[in-house]
Amino acid sequence: MNVDLLPEDCYAHILSYTSPRDACRLSLVSSTVRFAADSDNVWEKFLPVDYQEILSRLVLPLVYISKKELFMRLCSPVLIDQGKKTFSLEKSTSKKRYILGARELSITWANNPLYWTWKPFLQSRFTEVAELRTISWLQITGKINTKTISPKTQYAAYLIVKFAERAFGLDSLPSEVSLEVGNGSFKSQGTVYLRWQERKKQLECLGHLYFLHRDEALRSRVSEGDGERFAREREDGWIEIELGSFYNDGGDGKEVKMCLKEVKGQHLKGGLVVEGIEIRPKE
Image (cartoon, rainbow, N blue to C red; front, side, top):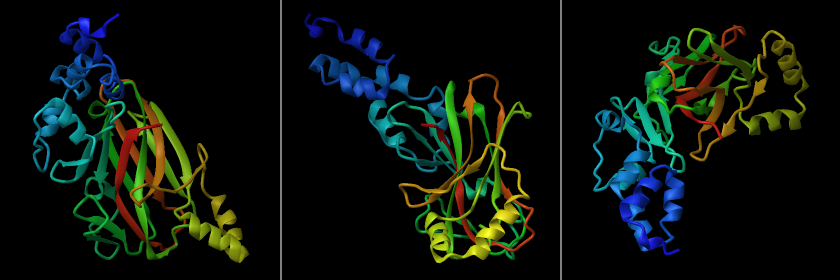
């Protein structure tokens, strides 16, 4: 069968029910399919239904000549809401993803310069980050409504951080992480050591039994919940820590509360650089 015999708008209608990845692949079939695959009718279907509202919240307006170009531009994070968040789309699935900047989070005593410093950071996508000077009560919380993210999708939340050279006390006791949807209808919990892998290997290689035994003793004071999680390096050079995951069924909007805290050790800690919390579809 000659695929070029079908009208272009027929192909456009069919392609609008696929995914961005499939539309790009199928555009290689023929020139007729390619024209249909590039049409605004197809790519508007891949844009979120509230994309106009999202565009109105941009810090800097986007220039585009087609819906496909707009989609591709939104696949790179753009600043929204006075620069306190970023928004982007996953190129293969068109699912939404957000990063809540540090200014959008609730950080205990963050406005007290004795405990936290707000400053520009060259590697950050935001104008400033929060760096922990010294504190005993560490608690970082973020919130997002399920209405703002893609329905019928499994999501995960990740705290994005770096460790300053002077970092201390962060791995003396595991921090507790949690994610709660609605009024406790779903909740996951776990623990994580705020340390980078190089530091962990260094302690083990040097045989610092005192620190290792101390960790084990202190760890017994913390409930592990779903189990221990680990910090891992991202492609952008930051470190991410999974706070939890959940399924967004697309029903009534519910508040998702994500939290990391270490409040039981009563010891001083410092050197944690907080960029924000990312909410993205889980692989």
